[in-house]
Image (tube, rainbow, N blue to C red; front, side, top):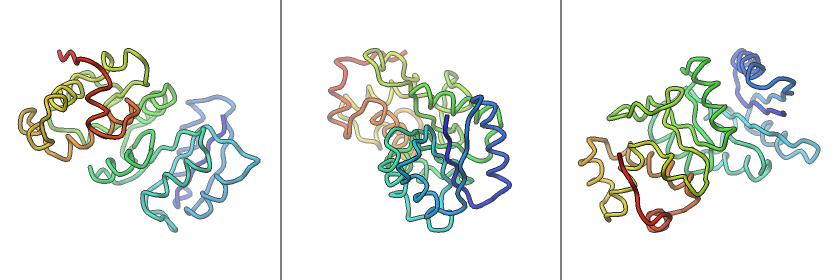
Length: 217
């Protein structure tokens, strides 16, 4: 496995590298201290990475479009954000721009390893810290689990995501869904983004048509 790490703090990169060695044996690493360097390394035709980890707002950071730039250069890699920020808006922007997960730097080693393991299985990791209101007990590794796309996907969604999807199908707005479920609109938007990404759809209409019926617990 080849892993590319982008972060402007050398001590964090070293710590992350040691942690990732626990996830995959015989992994090889490349490191970048700014976004331009990270992008150049990702653009190398001689290297195909399995995982690209990027910090937010490192020197040269172009905004969340940078995630798409990395994905364009490494289309077969999982691009994951690891950031000190736990703002809902940052998590939502990262997912909307194609990140396979968002891991706060405050996460424990166990949570970070579980999150990366989930991502490699094809899921999407969303941190519990930004989904604090009404979070369900069916989480794994401290975050909201969105399983990989397959014909039985909806049965594997968390209860909260099934509840959001049910109300989406009823034509309710984010504000109405938030009110009914006791969530903030920001939390509903994050759930929506994760559901869209997992279903492989781009909007509410496509999500509503993805399956004939939802079965909330």
